[in-house]
Length: 344
Image (tube, rainbow, N blue to C red):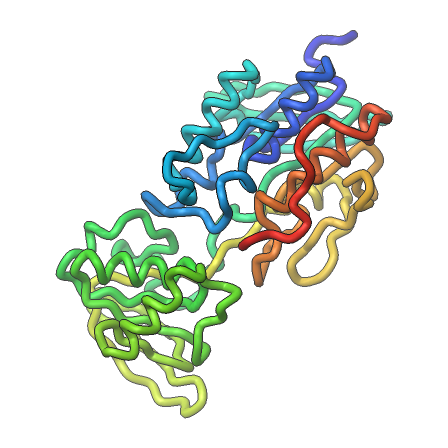
C-alpha cells in the first residue's frame, strides 16, 4: 500500500460527515477525514444562542442521544459541544483546518490535494464522500454599498445594535429571527421584504406569531413589496416593486439576510452532473453514488443551493445508511431509523 492512500476519504466534518466517520471506524474501514475549518464549521457561525428547528432526538448522530433536562430544542452552542463529545467518544481522527484545493480522478483513484498551515499534502483513495454542506457563502445582491463595514450578510448577536437603527432585508427565518432579537435588544428595526407576508413554512413556528404581532402594533416597521437598491453610510435607497417609487431611509446598520449558496466546485471539477438552478448533484438514491463511480454525496450538499429549505440534518441520516451499505455490501450501520419527514 502506498503512503497516504486510503480506502475512503470524507470531505466535510458537519454532523453527517461525523456520523459517516463513526460508521466507517466501527467497521474497521481505512479512511481519512478532512475539514477546511473546525468541526461543525457552518453551525459555528450561526447566531449566538440560536435554537434549532429540530428536536434533539432528530439531530442526534451515531446513536448517541443529546441529553436535555427540559426537553427543549438545542442551541448552537449546545449542539457544537455535543458534536465535540461524539468526536472524543469515538476517537475520530479528523484533520481540521486542512482545505481541499483540488481533486482529480486517475486510474480509478481519487487524488486529493490539500493545504494546511501553508503546507501542501496529497492523498489517494478508492472512494470519495463529499459531505460539504449547502451554505458556503451568502447570496450577494450586487448593489452599491453592499461591502460597507456596517453591512453584513451574517447575524452574530444583537448587542451591537442597542439603540441603533437597523434595516433587515429578507423574509425567511434568518431575517425574522435577526429582526426579533435586535428589537428585543433595544434596536429600532425595519424589515424590507419583497413579499407581502411571511411564509409559515420558512419561519420557525414559535416566532412567527411574535413578529406578526410586533409588526401589527407598529413596534417593528415592515416595508412590504420593497427591495434595497443601494446602501450608503447612513441611509439605504429602497424601491417599491409594484409602483417603482424610490426613496431613502435612515439607518445605522444593514443586515442582508438573503440566504446562502453551496460551493459545488469540487463536484463540477470531477464532472458530477448538476441539475437545475440549485445545482443539485445527480445521484442514485439507493447508494448516494453520483454519476462518477466511487464518488458519493451526503448531507445537505445533496440539495445544492436550497432556495426553499427542505433538506436538513434530521432527514440526512439515511445517507449514512445508504453509503455504508454501498461500501460494505451490507444493509445496516446499526443506527436508529431515519426520520422520513422533518419537523422543520
